[in-house]
Structure formats: structure tokens, C-alpha cells
Image 1 (cartoon, rainbow, N blue to C red):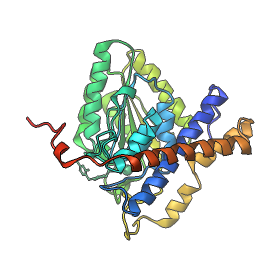
Image 2 (image 1 turned 60 degrees about the horizontal axis):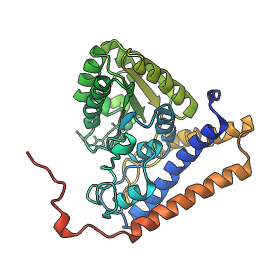
Image 3 (image 1 turned 120 degrees about the vertical axis):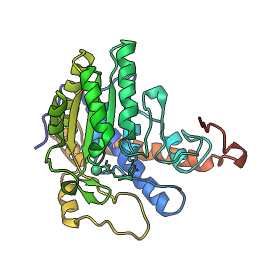
Image 4 (image 1 turned 90 degrees about the horizontal axis):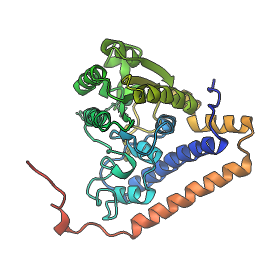
Length: 326
Ligand SMILES: Cc1ncc(C[n+]2csc(CCOP(=O)(O)OP(=O)(O)O)c2C)c(N)n1
Ligand SMILES: [Mg+2]
């Protein structure tokens, strides 16, 4: 069952579909180019989980800050990052967000409140809790959002940060993307609770479980949590149940060890197909509207890839620029 459409203009709902499709097509391209040897480092795909990033970011303002994980393309795109600079970063080019020296796991754009992807599992939770404290001290009513996985919810920073954020009533959303696995390890092998949201009770804050493949359900939960945070009532833990379609990372010749039947079941819950169906049923989308969105997405991605491919690699002399040590 898909959640009824919230009270959002049709244009905004179609924009959610466009962003979800952009994430999917961006990663299909990134995966193909990685496997073709054009992209270096490591690429973790978010395909299948698009409704979480888009639903949450749909409830945010530009000045609100988010932090991401090692699986960060979806959060960047949902917050409005530039596709060309993202692709250039994956391609290791000077025009990328990190001047081509960070790759997929190091994309940040402070101008849009995207504080960065992060290769350290649970590392981002502590950084963005600091942003939540900053938001509280600034007093402008902005909020901070931590995206993290089910695996990260077993690490120390999760517990320490929820505790302090609850105690200080920081204006925060903690969004757990429960895709049922931490790398290859099934969630049941790493924690005894069936709902990670239940952990919120231990810190005295609300914990909510949401169908993470239902963009409107995610949006509505995020909206309520944002209202609560902006009103000074403190953080909310939102657990989004979802699933990734690709293996943990893109790798040549290594099969995905997960149960393929389980994967097929989750593909049947495709968040993009569900939104598309709902918009059609509402009378807010038809074949030609969908074709226009698809065409716009592909055109934007072609331009992003062309920009990346035409950009120079950083020179060896620049290797130690922007590198800090204490
Ligand atoms: C501190 C730390 N420990 C281990 C790793 C290796 N590692 C990378 S991703 C990952 C699993 C993370 O699982 P989860 O938080 O559920 O995120 P998902 O990959 O499912 O999105 C692990 C253990 C790491 N990057 N950082
Ligand atoms: Mg996980």
C-alpha cells in the first residue's frame, strides 16, 4: 500500500519522481563506467533506496544541513548537488567537488547544506550532530539530518550522539536506512531488535518506523520530525525499511552473496515504479509527462559525463594541496 499523496502541488510530486530517477540513472551510469575502468576507487550504489533521500530532503529547506555515508550519491542529488561536479569527482577530475582527489565517498557541497559523504561507518553521525548544535546556537530555525545505515546504528557514535542530542534537544533528524545488511552481514546477525527505531526509547525521543520505499510515507515522517525539531522539541529517530538492489560495492566478477529471491521480492517494491503508478492514478502523470522527465534526466546526465570526460586530471604538483595535518 502506497501512502496517500501529501498536500503537495503536482509539480513538487513530479520533481520528487525526477530526483529519484536522476539518482537511479546517475548510478546506472556510474556503475557501468566503473566496471569499464573509467571511474576509480570504490562506488557504492543506492539504487532501490531512492525514496529515503528524496522523501527526507523534500521536507528540508536549502539552509538545513545533511550528512551522508559511503553510499552518498542519492543524498547529494536529493539535496540539489551539481551532477557535473559529482561525476567529475567520480572520474577523478580537477573540476570535481574534491578536485578529483576524493572520489565517490568524498562529495560535499556546503553551499546546499550537504556536509559530505563519509567513508567511516557512523563517522558522519558525530559530525552532523555538531551541525545540529550549530543550528541551535545560530537560532535561525534550521535543522540537521544524519543519514546512516543499520550497520552504523550498532556503532558507538550513534548511541553517544542520540544521547546528547536528546539531552540538549538539538534540532535533528536521525534517519536510519535499514537495508537489512551491513556490507554482506544480515541485520539479524548484528542486533537482536527487529526495529532499530525502538532504540529511540532509550534516549527519550520518538522513534518511527517507515516504509522506506514509499516516498510520501518518508516525506510525511520527515515533515513531522522537522516540525518538532524547528519547534525546539528535539530530535527524532526515523527508521526507513528498504533494500539495495546492487551488491555492497561495484566489483568486477564478484557475485552478490545475498539471497537472490529476497532481492526479487524487493525489486517488486520498486520505489520509483510505485511513485510513478501513484502519480498516474492521481491524474498527475501520463506517458508523455514521464517521457519528458526521462529525457530531461538522460540529457542532464549526458552533459555531466561529457563535462567530466572533458575535464583534466589533477596534476601531481597539486597532490598535497588542501591536505591538512595537525
Ligand atoms: C569504522 C568503519 N568500520 C568498517 C568499515 C567497513 N564498512 C564499509 S561499509 C560497511 C557496512 C555498513 O553497513 P550499513 O551501515 O548498514 O550501511 P549500508 O552499506 O548498508 O548502506 C562496513 C562495515 C568502515 N568503512 N568504517
Ligand atoms: Mg545496511
